[in-house]
Length: 309
Image (cartoon, rainbow, N blue to C red; front, side):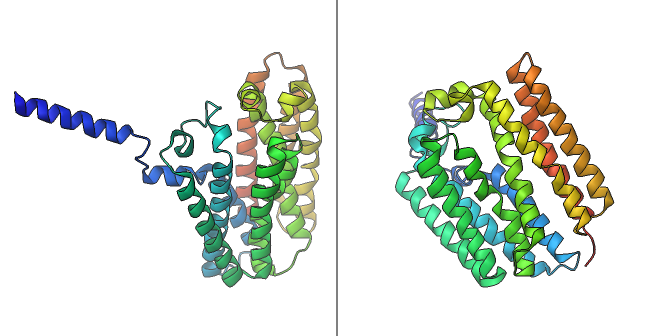
């Protein structure tokens, strides 16, 4: 009986230890880098590199470029989690992260962010070229300093300006091959830049009360849902010329043009339907998930139908 009690006490102690906020796991260190954001942006960086290569791909340089981009993006996301840890405690979808719960210590996370950033920039500058390194730094600076530390807490412009950092990965991939900023780089930048605000605002409409409670001046919170719907329209509309220009200037073929243009028209139609939608949350959910599929399918079509160099 005594042995059974000791075993039970030992089991309870182990269980409590596992649930203790002191016990960070490797998953916490992965989660704090926001793997979902990294995954989608790595696809974009790959597409940028592939388009610039025209199927004549230097695979070693490609792998190093993706590695450097991944580390830089991970660093920016870890910095974001570090500086937003107080606000993350107020939101249902973020309060269980490693920092708000105390499983990760702020000092540890800060060192983690710095190390990732230095490593990522070193890889880009050393193996992908000066321009790739510069754009990597610009992406980090905009996301950490301009977006996270400044605009996210003070202005509805945070989403639009922050989109600059999210549009850097395909440009990094592109200039790692070309060593120059030409029309191709600008078109890839435009695709990712214009995609982000309507994508994020759809999420913001769904979770506006969470953002309101946390004190984020997100557009749906400050200006209302209808104003947000109206502001999404020009961004989605401006996506229409991007596949046309990529095709017209021989960066991609006719199959990409047809697929990407059809997706752009469908997204615009769905966005316009939001003006008469009776259930804003249901509409926003459809728009959000369509935007994810839009980007994924567009980038896959672009890679598969890139014009040979």
